[in-house]
Amino acid sequence: MSQTATTYVVDPVHSNVEFVVRHLMTNVRGHFGSYDATLVMDPADLSRSSIEFTIQVASIDTANKDRDAHLRSADFFDVDNHPTITFRSTAVRKTGDDGFEVKGTLTIRGVAREITLPVSYLGEIVDPWGNTKVGFEVATRLDRKEYGINWNQALDRGGFLLSDEVRVEIGLQFGVKG
Image 1 (tube, rainbow, N blue to C red):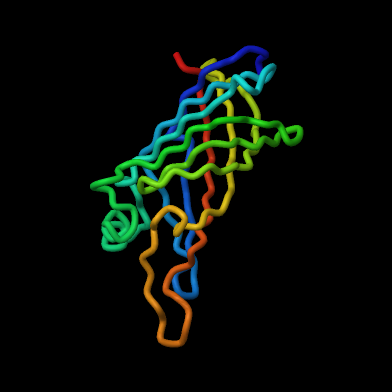
Image 2: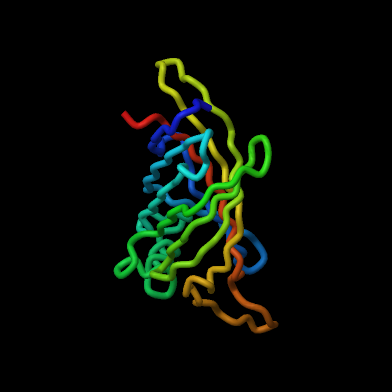
């Protein structure tokens, strides 16, 4: 990493925002196809580092059009009233050689909650065209009910159709803002 603050923008072609939720006995995977992120990274003074991340909820894709339409509805994300998911960092702390904790506010469906995300730094490289790239991974679990996503259906033999827990896996590649 360079030793001064650098502003980066996400490269959505080489990044991913994915989630996994239990449905009955199997996991359903999905992703968001449209998002934007700006990262300011200052390795010499992490208090000057920050990230702002916005997901366009309408871009949700679980490979099933009917399910995706239901997820966009008021039963789940309520895209008409809450078109974005946002994360804005408030603090960054180094936890190891390549590890960080990023604290911030995650807003889903109009509900804002303070969370801490474990972040792995994947390194910095210069691509074959001379562009500096940095990469990060985030893996966390969220309780969807904490964000007002409460829809579910009871099963005849007990339990529910969907898990409350959602696994979130994000891989982000950034390029220096030009």
